[in-house]
Image (cartoon, rainbow, N blue to C red):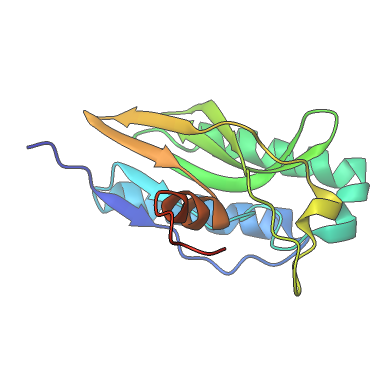
Length: 162
């Protein structure tokens, strides 16, 4: 039986504090590695804080966030980290970077963007259109962000309402 130790990088990111958030992420990555975890997962938009809203209109903010993810990739030696950030492909995406053993190996774009109550993600982000499945030490694992997991699980049940 294959086992995979997963750590949760529970942090409370501050919106706009990319440097401080990245430092907290790097600390939790080191703690996870020291604790014997193979994988550490962080919250949605951990690098930028949630919700970044109009900060996304500033190109320097986006680049700073991307630079932080590149630095975090280098700090991922000896483990895999899944880190929430803002990706840019001509438009912004709410995304998760998969960092593995010093490299940025994959990116997942959030598919289901909430747009009700206090959520206004459709205003700021483009929706992703594909799943991401990883193979980690003989274990398959999917990457999802927030409502992606809930709505995918519910879609398997015809009686579910959402």
